[in-house]
Image (tube, rainbow, N blue to C red):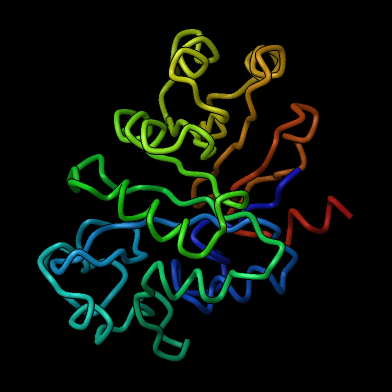
Length: 237
C-alpha cells in the first residue's frame, strides 16, 4: 500500500511546498500528492487553490501572475511559525524527486479553470525527467484525464471524486483509467471489492479531520492519501 502525503506533510508543514515534500519523505511517505496550475507565463506551478489568498500573502488568481511574481510570495501564511516558503514549480519538484523511490500523484487543477494545454505541458516535463513509471495523474476534470490518455495511454491516471457515483467501478473502467481516487466517506467494503474484481486500484483521500486511517486497511486500498503520513507509517510498521 502506498502511503501518499496529501499536498506533502500538510498536517504539520505549509502545504504544497518543498519543505512539506521533504518532511513527508522523512516521515515515511512513499508517495507524494500535490496540485498543479498554470501561471500567466505558462509555467507549471504547485499550489492548491485557484486563488492566492488562503495559503499565501498574495492576492488574485494564480493564472494572473507570472512564475517570477508567484515565487516572490510567502506560501507559509497558514504556518506563521514556519520559515518563509515559496510556491514551487513542477520542474523544481522533479529535480528533487529524480532518483528517489517515490510515487508522485499530480492532480491537475483544471476543473474550475480549464487550463488549455496543461496536459501536454505536464507530459513534456515527465518525459524530460524520464519519470513516467513513478507518476499518477489525477483530476476532478475527467475530460482532462481522457486527454492525458490520448497523449500517452501508458501514463497511469486516477479518477478523483467526492460524490457517490453509481457503479463507480464501471464508470472508471469505461474511461480506461487505472485508479479511482474517492474521498474516504464514500468507500465501503462492497465498493472496494468491486474495484478489486475489476483490477482497478483504489487510492482513498482524506480531508482535514484527524481520522483513524487504520480502519481503512481491511478495504485493501492501493494507497491512502492523508495529511499525516507519519501516522500511516506507524500502523503500517
